[in-house]
Length: 213
Image 1 (cartoon, helix red, strand yellow):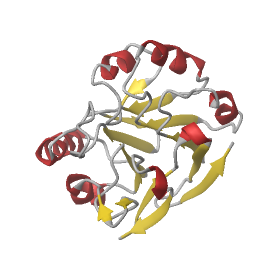
Image 2: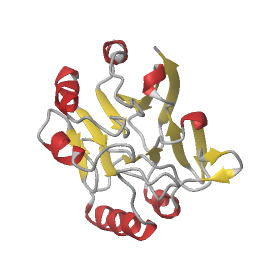
Image 3: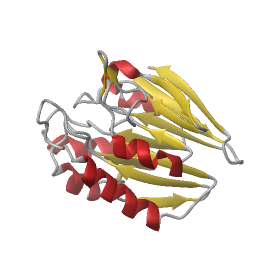
């Protein structure tokens, strides 16, 4: 069994980090929007405060330069990358598909598709295969008003995973199951929301608790 704490949408508000760490997970995943359009100086210090292995992708509100900052921090950058941790494989795609707001880290659907195709083709399959994507899959936990704002490319590739950890749409906190793939949006960590993911010893043995600190 491995317990992973999922947070996202901090938007530069790091005051609840110690409360998140007190949950006592084995690892932490941050699914983007670590900052609110910067600044980047506090990001290295944020990861140095996390006392368990930590993994992250940037969000659409993060400057693209945050990738280098994460790379040189105590955290692990998952954007466009993958790694295996025993029975778990993590893969990541940061930023988001285009929004009406021209935020700093947006990608065309074709770019998202290209990145995910490359990552999936080289990743090692494990008991639990987890995609960390700031943008939700199209049609899943992605409603803004009456519009589905998720990524079509993420939706097209989610079948290659057992779990998709996403964020982006603050109001769509929740857990969904789509054709046997679990999708979780932990809600904005700036408000103390998070999700504790229990990864069991067998395939598909994934349990998710939505929490608030």
